[in-house]
Length: 264
Length: 264
Image (cartoon, each protein chain N blue to C red):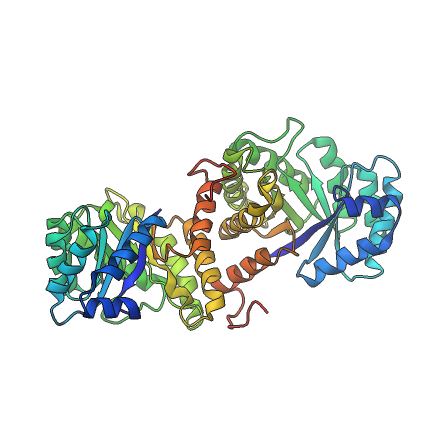
C-alpha cells in the first residue's frame, strides 16, 4: 500500500504561516516526520494558489527535496503551478488531482505523460460529487479514456472514488466503497491493457465528526477499503493507531511476515 | 451481525471451577455481562464433557436462562449433552459445531431439525484442518449437502472457514478469508434455494500472540471478514475496542444511522 502523507496543507495554520513567510523549517520537519512514520509520498497542498503559484510550488518542492529524500504529490487547482513543480521535482512525482472535466484532462494528462508523473483521477465533475455509484463510474471512465488517449500508463493512474464525511453524507460513504469495488473491475469491463490503481483521501470520512471518533472512523474505513483492494491512501501517517491497523492488515493478509514484534 | 459471546468456556479458570462446584453465580454474571455488552448469543463451551455431560449441560442452560433472557450456543463434542441441552433450552438454540464427518452430520443435522436449532458447520474433517481453500470448500459442501438431506433450513446453517493463529499459521489466516469469500458464493455455485450464513471463532487468530496485540489483531481481522460479508462471530463482547470497531463498521456501511454519539 502506498501511503501519501497529508499533513503539509495550506489549510493547517502552521503550514499556512510557513508558506506565507517562506519559512522552510516547519515544512521540512513535517515532511521528514511523515517519511519516518512510513509515508511513501508527501502531499503538498498549496490551495488554489492563484497568486505566485508557480514560484511557491517550486520553492516548496525544492525546500523539501533538498533535505528529505521523498517524492511529492503536487496538490493545487493551479495547473501552471503543478507544471512548475514538476519541472524541479526529483523522482516520480504525483499530480493530485484531475477531475473528469475535459479541459482539465486535456492539460493534466499530457503533463503527466511529459514528466512521467503518477496522476490521481477523481470521480468529480463540473456537476460536483456524483450522486450515486453509476455516475462515479461514468466520470472515472472518462478519466481512464483520457489516460489512454494521452498514453499515460494505466499503472500510473490512481482512481479516487471520493470519500465524503460520514457525519454529513452517510450514504455517500457507502457509495464510495461500492465505487472502489466497481473501479477494481474496470480492467475487465473496459478491456484495458493494464489495471489502474485506486486511492482515497481518507481523513475526509471523519470530517465534522468529534475529535475522539476521528481516528477510529479513519482506520476502520481504511481496513474496509483495503479489504476491497485499495492500493493507496492520502492519510495521516503520524496517526499511530492508523499505521498499526495497516501493518496488522498486511500481516493478516499475508503481505508481510508475522513476528511478535511486527509493530516495532 | 450476530455476536456470540465466547467467555463461558471450561478453558477459563473461573468457569472451570464454577462448573466443577455447580456454582451458578459466576456463570450467570458472565452471561449477563456479555448480553449487556451486545452479545446476541452466549456460547457454552463445556469441553469434551465425557462424564455427566447431559446433566451438566442441562444445569448450565437452565442456570443461565432462569436469570438472563438470551439464547445459547451449545458447545461440546458430546452429542448427547447437546441434545440434553436442547431439550431444556428456551428460544432458538445454536449447535456449535458439526464437522464434515458423516457420523457427526448424521447425528447433529437431524437434531438441529428436530429442535429448530441453528447449527455451525465447521471446515474440519477427520483429517484435521484443510490445508488450502479448495479443501475447505469440499468439506463445507458436504455439510451443506447434509443440511439439505435432513431439511435443515440453510438460513439456520452457519459455515465456519476456521480461524487459526496468525502467529503460528499465517498462510491459513489468509486462506480463511479466501474460504469465507468462497462460502459466500456457494448459493450460486451449488444452486441452493437459500444462502447459508457464515461465522468465525474470532479470537483464535490472536492465540499465541502477545497480549498487547490480541485486541488489535482480533478487531482488524473482524473488519476484514465483515467487509467480505461475514454474518456472525464468536468473540469477546467485553472487548470494548472490538465492539466499537463493529459499530463503526455498521456506520460506514450504512447499516445503522450515524450520530456523533453512536458509540454511547
